[in-house]
Every structure is written in C-alpha cells, then in structure tokens.
Length: 148
Image: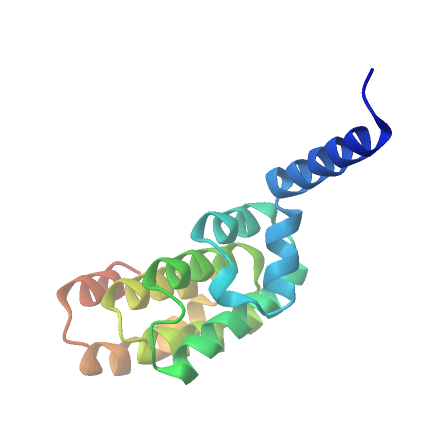
C-alpha cells in the first residue's frame, strides 16, 4: 500500500511534468522575466504555441539583451525568441524586430530578425532595407536582406 505523502508527492510531480511538457512552465518563466532561465527549447515551444500574449515578454527578452550588451541571454535564446516573436507577434512588433536587426551583436540573430521582420511587417522592412544594407557588413545578413 502506498502512503498518502508519497501519493501526494507523486501526484504533484506528475502535474509538474505535465506542465513542463505542455510549455506552461516556460511561459511562466518568460512572463516573470526570468530570461536567463528560459531555455531555447522553451522559447521554441512558446513560438509554436501561437499565444499572442507571449509577444510582450518576448519583446522584453530581446530588449534586455540589447540593453545589457552582454551575453546573459545567449545567441541561441535570442534566435529562438526572434523566431517565436515572428510567429506570435503582429505588425506592431516590427519596430522591435527592426531594432534587433540593426543593433544585435550577433549576425545570426540579426539574420533571423530580418526573416521575422519580413513576416511581421513587410512594408517596414522594404522601407528600411537600404539603410540596413548600407550599415551591414556580414554576408549572411546581407543575403537575408536581399532575399526578403
């Protein structure tokens, strides 16, 4: 016979595992601003969720990365956040994506930001393409600008 404390602990662990599998735990960490603790996989799931309410925390994660100028938020996290915002955001998120495309230190992140900007707000990308091209030296980023 299983004791009640063990059964209760097992039930709690089962619920926690279900929440982590469903992405609810990652949404909570993201919504609470614990950006360094959010894994790239969790950010990927946030993007696949299609939850528009995650757009604001995703923008905040990217803004924190730009403001800090450090690598507390990794390139991999930033790329997944850019992709997720590209999936969950709307045209109003174009300005945030344009800032990432201009200012992020990683060419990989900038390239993904251009892809997301092309999806979120094509007119904004068209208007800014020339300025982005003239300021960009990385061949991958320049290729993404030419393709979109």
